[in-house]
Image (tube, rainbow over all chains, first blue to last red; front, side, top):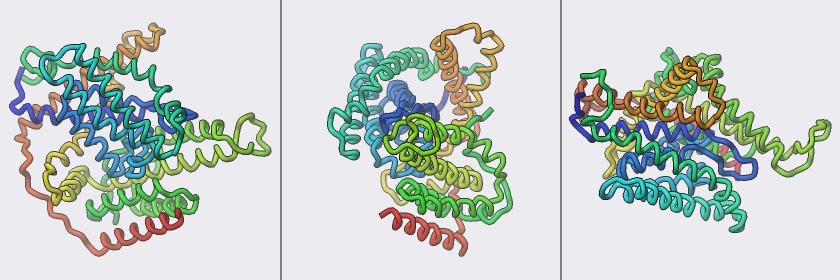
Length: 190
Length: 254
C-alpha cells in the first residue's frame, strides 16, 4: 500500500468526487406534482460530504457544486442551471446545503468520530437546510406558512429519515478510506 | 455506458472551436441567465434560433448529441405530463382526457423548453472547448478576485467534469456484474439498491484514490504555466452579439 504524500490532494480529489456525486444525485430527481421543490438525492450526498470530508472540504465540495451551477452547467436538480435558479424559489435549499454541510462537518468532525455525534450532526444539518429553504420558498412565492410547509417540508420528511440512516451507514463503511494505513484502498498500485 | 456524457469535447474544424474559451464561457453564463428569466415564448424562440445557428456552425454531430441528451428529453417529457395534469386551468377542447389543462400544458412546455435550452448551451460550450482551455478560462476569471485559490478551484472544476462520467461507467460495470450474479432473483428493490449503492461508492472512492496516486506520480502542482489567450475580432463580435440577444430577451420579459 503506497501512501499518499499530500493529504491535501487526496481530500481535493475526494471533494471533487463528492461534488460529482451531488450532481448525479440531482439528476435522480422526481418532480412533485404539487410543489416547485423536487425530491432529489443531492442532499443525501451533501450530508455524506459533510460527514465524510469534514467542514472545510465539505464546504469546498458544495461550494464547487453551486459554482458549477452558477456558471450555467446543468447540475442543479433535474438538469437546471444558472443564476436565476440559484436565486429562485428553491435557492434557499441550495444555500442551505452550504450552511448545513458546515454544521455537519463541525459537529461530527470535532473529537472522536461516533455514530451518535454523526446522527446529531445530520439532524442539525437538516434543520438548517429546511430552516433556510422553507422561509426562502415562502418569501419568493409569497405563500402562507402552512402552504410553504406543505410545499417544502412535509413531503420530504420520510425521505429525509431514510437518507439520514443510509448516510450514517455509508460513512461508517467509507471512513477507513480516509486513514490509509490498513485501509482497503487500492492494492493494484504498489 | 457513459449515460450522461454531455460534457465532452468533440474535435472539429469550425469557427466556434477556434474562438476564445473565456468569451464562450461568459456567453454561456449570459445565455443561461437569459434562458432562466425569459418568461415569454418570443424570448425563448429567439434564444433557440441563436443556439441553432451556433450548433450548425460548430459542426457538432447533431445525431449523437440528440442521443446524449435523451435523458433530458425524457425528463422534460415527464415535466410536461406532470404539469399538464396538475396545473389548474381550462381543459383542452377536443382531447377527451380527464384533467388535462391548457395552462398546465403550456407551463410544462415552457419549463421543458428552458431546460433543453440550457442543456444545449452547455453541450455546445463543452463540445467546442477542450476541458483544459475551459479550466484555464475559469482560472483566468477567478484570478482578480482576492483570497480565492483560483488554480485549485479550476482544477477541481475540471476534475469534477471528468469524474461524472466515471461514476456512470462504474455504475454500469456494477450492474453488469450483479446481473451475472443473478441479482434479478432478489425481488426487494431496497435490497437491490443496497447491493448497488454501497459497492458503487466504495469503488468510485477507490478509483479516486488511484487518481490521486496518478496525479502525484506525475508531479501535480498548482504552480503551472499560465495559458495565453488570444482574442480576435470574431470573439468580441460574439460577445456583443450575445449581449444584445440577451438584452432583447430580457426586454421582452419586462
